[in-house]
Image (cartoon, rainbow, N blue to C red):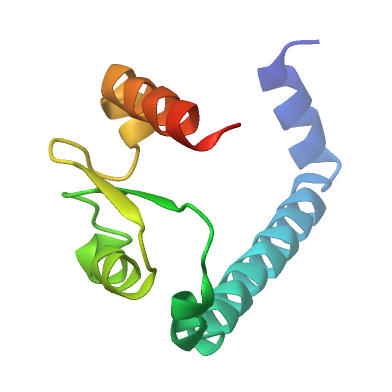
Length: 116
């Protein structure tokens, strides 16, 4: 049975409204979870602990990132002693995709310096 016939059958049997209600309920749960996650992330502030990080730390960020922005990157760079920061100038939020060769090269170089 093709999808069109299945839809027609579902409508005829009044199953489609039940399916839609279930779908909306699942979407609502997902949206509530997403909102709760964001509230939790905003409330969980560990910036005062950044200065306690003493292991080698590589900070990688996208200059054009509309989600994370450079404020957090700058804060980490200033707060974590002896950290190294790499900025991907032409990337938005996915430097591992948008500047993959540079990202892999920088990671390889950093690990070769910091791995026994």
